[in-house]
Structures are given as structure tokens and as C-alpha cells.
Length: 313
Image (cartoon, rainbow, N blue to C red; front, side, top):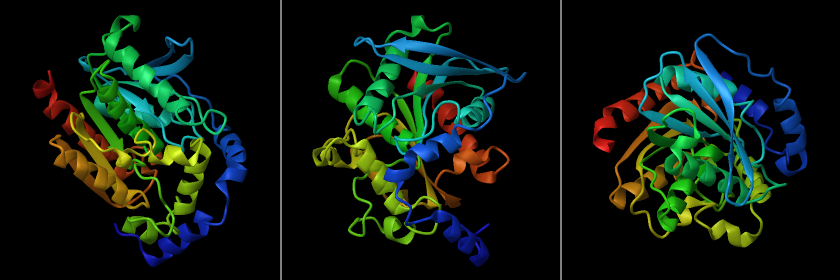
């Protein structure tokens, strides 16, 4: 159902447009991380797997295997949180629900967070996780099969960046990616070229000023804003990118830049499915599968995985 005027007033009260994320991100982390730790469940099993990169950096991943698991493909998941907050514990329920809904293994990546670890360190961790899973599947205790990159918000940004970097460096190939309300641009001020930044940038929980503050914490310098691995819309070449499912949310300041990214991928000859989630807010995946937007997203992901499975082999 559409957002009525009472809901819009409530959202406006909760959006806190004047809060400076750059000053309170540590408090935001501490509040989020007070959530109950993950518990074991009869419908899935999980364990942690550490990847050691060629540079000696250890990257923690968490593997979710649903009880009803269809072998042959794995979802490599990068969490959201503006590159600054969240972790594999706070995204436990999202990954658990995703594994159960898709009957697929989900591998969640604990990448390093800014500002302590600014761009491109978090991206490096995600890239190394993808390279390990695609080039060295024998190092896991299961066959990953066909690997699909997936992420929401900042995680969608990281998935897109990993795919661009994989093509550029030529060490491995990403065949599929799922980008859920991804951040792809570099300007969320009043000068943004995207209407959704202006229309949805104040009263819908995630504000445009919050996005800009997260970018400020993530980047090392102003030059990074022109780097396509930080802002994929800055790329000059969109060819040879994975088959893509891109989902945006109607009331999201990032909506239009995500849809523009889908358009550019498609214009470059890539196979793209774009879906705008009606009446949805940024971050809706955290609501859980009781909510229609999450169930609909799970259905879209299943269609994307299984309808195209034979074509991708």
C-alpha cells in the first residue's frame, strides 16, 4: 500500500536530517551491535571461514547452508551500512532468510569498515573473497558452483565495484550480480543530477545528507570520488559486466542513480533486469520475510538464479 500522510509524518520525525553521521557513527555502531548474537537453527547451519589474502590480510566470512540446499550455486553477500556501520552479525537475519528463501548457500563477508579503513580497503576484502571463491573453490568445504555477487546499499556498491575491477584486472570473471538499492553516484547534494536525491532526500529515514556523510568517511580524498570503484557511475566502460538483477526502492534517495546504472549496463550490451520496488524505503531488506517487499525480493532473486541457471553454465 502507498505511504499515507500519517506514515510520511512519522518517517519525517525519524529521519533526523540534521544529524551529522561523521560525528556519531561510532555510537551508531555500538547501538546496532548490541543486538542478540546469532543462534543456531534447525532449518540451516552456519560456520565461519577465514580467507587469507596474498597480502596476508585475513577476511572473515560466514557460510549459511539451508537444510533444503540446492547445490550448484552460491550467493556471495556484501552487507550494507554506508561502508561505515553494520557487520556479519547485524546482517545475520538477512542472510539467514536469504539462504532459506533461495535454498542456496550464502557467504557473508566481514569487510573492513571506514573511516579506520578507508577506500579501497573494504573493497579489497570483497574482491579477495570473490577471487578466492571463484578461483580456489577447493579451499571451502563445499563446491560453490556458480557464484553470484549480491549486496544491498553500500554492499551493492561493493558488488558492482568488484565486477568492474574483476573485468579490468582479468584474473577472474563474475557471471552474475544482484544489486539491491545500490549506491552508484558521488554527489548527493542539492546539485545532484538525480531527482530522487531531491525528492526522497529528507523524509524517508535515509537522507541525502547521510549518504554524503558516509561517502566523506569512506573516501581518502576528493580524487576518490572520480574513481569508478568508489562511484561506479564514474566508469567510462560498462562492457563485459555480469548478468545483473538491480532492485531499487521507490522512496529512496539512491533510486535514480541505481536505475541509471542499470541503464548504462544495458546500453553496453549486458543483460539486465531492473525492478523498482513500489512503496518501499531504502533498507527494506532488514525488515524480514514477513514483509511483502522482502518476500517479493526473494522471489525476484529466485527467478534470476533458477530461470537463468542453464544459460549461465
